[in-house]
Image (cartoon, rainbow, N blue to C red; front, side, top):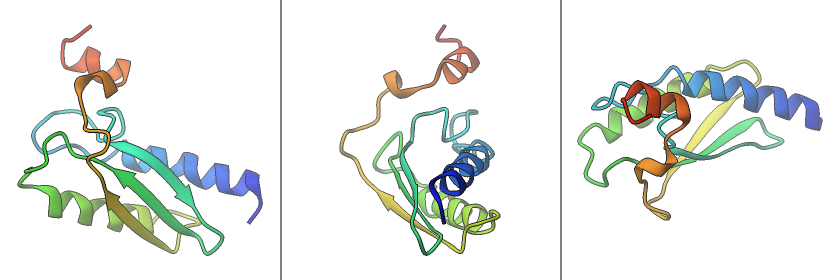
Length: 106
């Protein structure tokens, strides 16, 4: 897989992640700033590093399952590995401008 194909797949994954919404906030997980890193390796496995708005989020398992299912089903991707991190911890400064607008913070 060359660099342009990798970039194309990663761009496609951003679109997929924008279709997944936080269960408690009406904004997608990408614009919320929950996705810290997206990387597709040579074996076409998508590695996603993400956080949660709160460490004790009751919907974490369902959200991770939805991410794995949708990302693994994306053209050019064979599988998905999701890694949760709380370093750095999420805060509202990580929101995209679209998310801030949606939440009335702009």
